[in-house]
Length: 96
Image (spheres, rainbow, N blue to C red):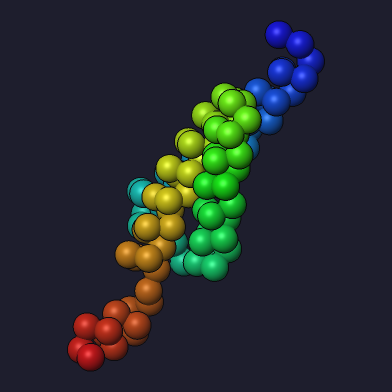
């Protein structure tokens, strides 16, 4: 493996692994109060585009890393949409 491949692979691993603590915390606690819905929505769209870009280039480190990151980001985004409301918002939504 050359230096470029090593750096790309290391970057892909580190950026993908960086999502595991947030995903684990969110799954375990269902606490997504610190997650910004707007930021995660835009971020998830960006990751999907990186995935498409990697596929168009045939760059498998980009494809694999972004496919895993997209799954984690979608899971966190889904939990934010499901559990992200405060109790007051739930009561208003449920009663109205």
